[in-house]
Each structure stands twice: as structure tokens, then as C-alpha cells.
Image 1 (cartoon, rainbow, N blue to C red):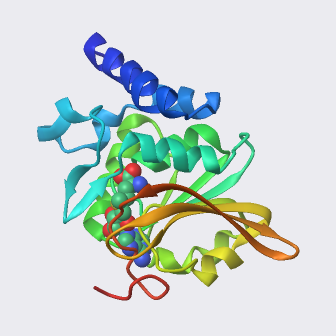
Image 2 (image 1 turned 30 degrees about the vertical axis):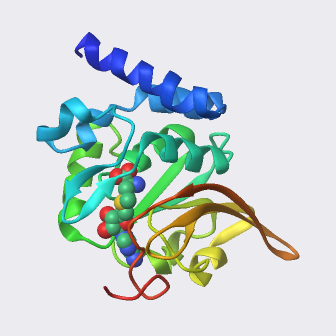
Length: 216
Ligand code: SAM
């Protein structure tokens, strides 16, 4: 692998993540390992470690590295968990989660992106990630309960199906708000109901589907 790519990845970890407060060493190591350049279109490879989201086609984006770092940190993964990633997009966040948890299922509504993400995940060596096509706002009931659920598209409220598919003590992270701006929110499932904590402001594409913003 080109040494400039490794150096760019190292700089991303130090400047965009650690310096901005991402302190979970497992997340920093995971993002220092996953080859983000394999998850962006070939024409954008030299931008793979820039500080922002990038277009991946079909009107969708690969999320900003910092936001991926915050989402993964909020999940507080130790390595033994089963995790659901909603909104596969490029597959990058699913690959980072595969470094952090035992089992990763990811679901995407656009067939073209499912195919591309499967290819990128295989090329990067993450063949164990289970990539599904479907409405992720409804979760993946047959694989529930999940210890963690990461939603990479904005929702107006916490989708009930997703909360229902969390294990007791499980953690769900999602961008909650309007189509134009949201806050990342951590929701923990407890015996007394959901406990919600707001994290950083963000801007994601909308979660479509039954428990998102509908079909378009
Ligand atoms: N985490 C991704 C990555 O690392 O590349 C970026 C995800 S992108 C910001 C959001 C994705 O959510 C898009 O690919 C979009 O098609 C998908 N999406 C939106 N609504 C969805 C739904 N109801 N079910 C599944 N995927 C959905």
C-alpha cells in the first residue's frame, strides 16, 4: 500500500478525530486500519481522507470521518456485540463497526449501493458483514436483539422498530431532527424506557421508509 495513503489515514485519525475529542482507542485504531479509499468512487480516491462527506453516487454520501468516529464511540463497543448499521451507503461505517464488534448486519434501500458496498467490503477483507437490501427503518427483526444500532440517515423521531430490536442496555445512535439539520442522539434501552442524550450537531440525508420520512 502506498505510504502516502497510510500517512493520510494517520493524519485523519490524529487531526480530525483525536484532536476533536474522539478518545475511544478502539475506534481510533479501527479507523486507522480501515482503507477508506476503497469505499469512495475511484475518481475521488485522493480525497478519501479529507475532512468531509463525499458523494458516492445516486444522490448519497459517505459520511465525514469525524461523524463516523463519534457514532462508533457513542456505541461503546467492547468487541463481543452484535450490531446493526442502518443506511449502508458505501459500506465504510459497516467496515469500521466490523473492527469493533463481533457481528455486523447492515441494511440499505438502494440495490445499486448494496452491490457496490458488498464489493468494497469484500475487497477490504470484511466478507463477514451481512449486507441486506430493504427498508432499514424497520430494522432486521430476524437478527434482533442488537447490542448496538447505528443509523446513518436522519429521522424525525426514534423509529419504534429499531428501539424494539435493541437488547436491554443496548445503544442506538441516530441523527434526529428535520431534513435540514439534526443532532446525533444516543438512546439507551432501559427497564424504565428509553434514556436519550444529545451529542453533536450534524447534517445527514433523510432516512426514507416507513418509520423515516416516508418514500421521498
Ligand atoms: N454510513 C454510510 C457510509 O459509511 O458510507 C453513509 C450512509 S449515507 C449518509 C445514508 C444512506 O442511508 C444512503 O445510502 C441511503 O440510501 C440510506 N437510506 C436512507 N433511508 C434508508 C432506509 N429506510 N433503509 C435503508 N437505507 C436507507
